Image 1 (spheres, one colour):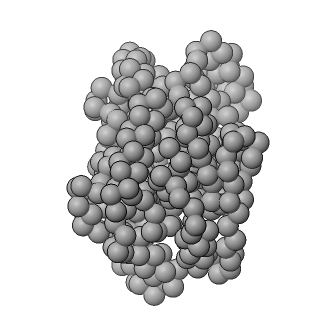
Image 2 (tube, helix red, strand yellow):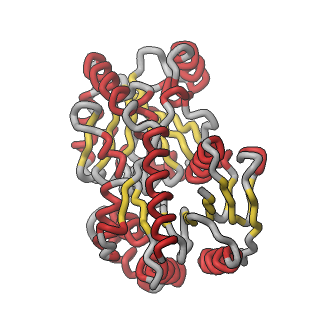
Length: 389
């Protein structure tokens, strides 16, 4: 098949969707398919040599209008080319397939408000959103994507996101597919775990006898770090728990919050870590009390590393778990006592081992091979629809 990828920037070293695009391109090319990339910038050294590049120019300012500019530029660039299937991974429209790995903006905006405790704060945020031109622009663009004349095949990254498509835009089931994220268990081989664990703990000043909970997220507030800091106050006296908070180097506000509520000495703020194995191998459990994640990659990665997982129903990756087999799923990150009870459960080493082993088994089912076969089926279906049109 001849397949066109449409995404503004493909620099795989940045992770996330850009890494995923590179992985999918490599696999397609290895199987004899032709891959085109329509983008404004890319790292050719991280992509297959045979990829055909199409430079797309988009205005960069104001930022909230950039997706409109890129989407229009992509449609113009596609004119005159006959691909079997075209796929967009973000704010594009008029393509055969749409696969928004960041989920729906409408759902994300609503869940962002949940990070404020119930009360005036939430009401104020709703008011601010109502008059925010960027918010209105993104909402209009999303309506263009999913309610326009050209009905694309839409891929949801989780059942939660599938539900959002139906709730916000009434996408019919015949146009919806689910293709969950996948992880590569080979990245987390055990042979260097003890050495890496000791090295990282020593580097960060964590004692060997401490029970470490790992948090990872770029957007600390959306991913629930303030709630996690508050939960630490409710842990039983004399516990040996230490939180390792990673993700963004911009953690001063969270450090001040930890100091204000009296838990600063229980938290190590490690900022961005290039190799996530440092965090996984140095820890005893993974805690992700997020308010919104379409399907976070860190959950199956943590499970692959044998860590029990604590997350929320707002995370599509919770669907990969069968609580309490691999860990615990809580309803509301603002329920600090419930979050503390979940953490306390894994103070028991037997419980950590039991859930960790179950997590490895569950994560092994969500391989990239399985995901790739699902994507091939969607590409083939899109190609059939295009030929029939």
